Amino acid sequence: DVKVTQSSRYLVKRTGEKVFLECVQDMDHENMFWYRQDPGLGLRLIYFSYDVKMKEKGDIPEGYSVSREKKERFSLILESASTNQTSMYLCASSLRTAAYNEQFFGPGTRLTVL
Amino acid sequence: GQQVMQIPQYQHVQEGEDFTTYCNSSTTLSNIQWYKQRPGGHPVFLIQLVKSGEVKKQKRLTFQFGEAKKNSSLHITATQTTDVGTYFCASRARQTGANNLFFGTGTRLTVIP
Image (cartoon, each protein chain N blue to C red):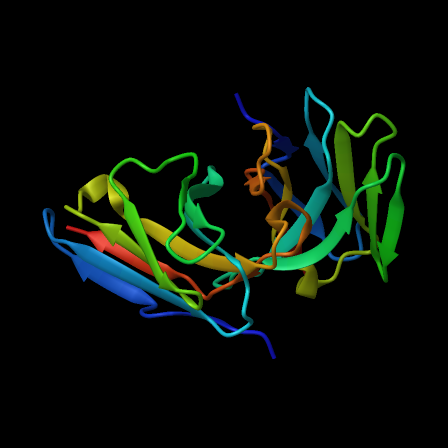
């Protein structure tokens, strides 16, 4: 059974803290994605990676960075968390040719920044 | 602007009624994918359409891709409480050479028993 896991379901951090969100997939997928989900705004792509050590900016990369040192792991980093980064964060993975392959999502991390 | 516009944003139906959500674009789309997210859950892939005028069915769900490949619809016949959730469409991002999806804002379906 395919699986995408995220390190935390719920996270509470303070403004200015450095935050790491981890995502692991066991499907040997080339592509991995980070989205944030906010009411009325749907899923917005933050960053994606199509290979180890490769990354591409999505639609809303400001305030975020990513790291992909191993194929199965994709990390999202908030260098200095701010209250407007309070959101649900979803990780996903897919086979190569991401635009035409289904994406498998993790359970999500609900981050609250106080 | 938005690559795909999804309407309506919310829909409340009585159990047994039909439901339709629409995904529209001003430009030709390469493909359309549909996902369902149950309350408290994560999006799960339902189907992909790539051909002009394509129609696919999954039990009570009917998916259509417009002839001009600028719109798509998801129709549920005789809704059940298990259909509750948010339905998203997604298509290949517009940028040249893009290899990622752009998601619509979703339609949240509530089914009243």
